[in-house]
Image 1 (tube, rainbow, N blue to C red):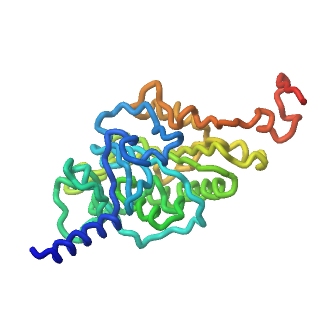
Image 2 (cartoon, rainbow, N blue to C red; image 1 turned 180 degrees about the vertical axis):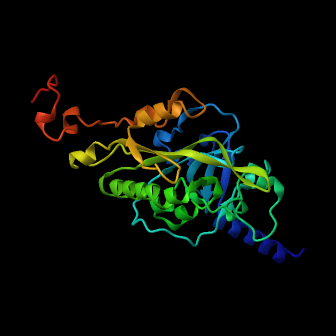
Image 3 (cartoon, rainbow, N blue to C red; image 1 turned 135 degrees about the vertical axis):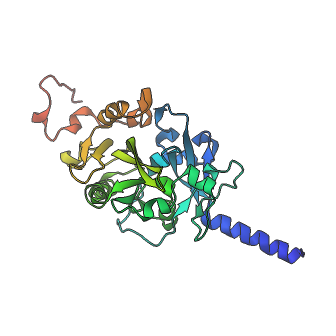
Length: 317
């Protein structure tokens, strides 16, 4: 092979790697530079006990974008954790769907790859969902845990279009209550979060599966849940907004009916998930419960002084 051909091959390889990026399966999110930047205080949720769960540092165009804890048995993410970016909320539909080779190949090069138009080796189907799992299923939509409308940069958005960031959501739930919730959170964080907002969105399962060719293929969530942490927020916001900071959570059933999204505290969500998932007594979504370095004085959580508890006292200096 001539030197010019070698150089051309190397250039094409580098170009493809930079375009499609990498999505690295790691032992710990701290093992990849800047992977933990999408986690509050660089700390992932603690307390998950299942040893089969895979940690994916989702890279795209040479940059870590978010992290995913992946259940290779059910072939769905347990959660994706990401930083919210201010956005107008429009949705894109022209990004290619991708998969994660490293879930099947320990010696893989780490590239998050677009699905080929032709044959995909069975070892990849064994480790994760593929497009055919969703192609003939009319009840379910591919529901993002890290939604593209919570991202502003085109490359951040493109990185959300991997099936390792997707779960089967009932269509009526996906395009109705859950999409409305994502939009409500987008507007709230756009307007009142002054620092970085960290979001974790995940699911619970009960064993129901999408089947293909008479085989269990993809776990169907029972619940979809989400929580955010924004330690720096507008202290002058109206009381009905201020009570949703610095943290707030949401929970809903992945069903056609009875799927209203309930907002609740992060601690209440953690208590609920403790009885629904394989987690231990130290389970915690955000480091130190997202306590702000300069916490809001308790009396500012009330709309007016007459709302203060009768036993509350403070000193004016």
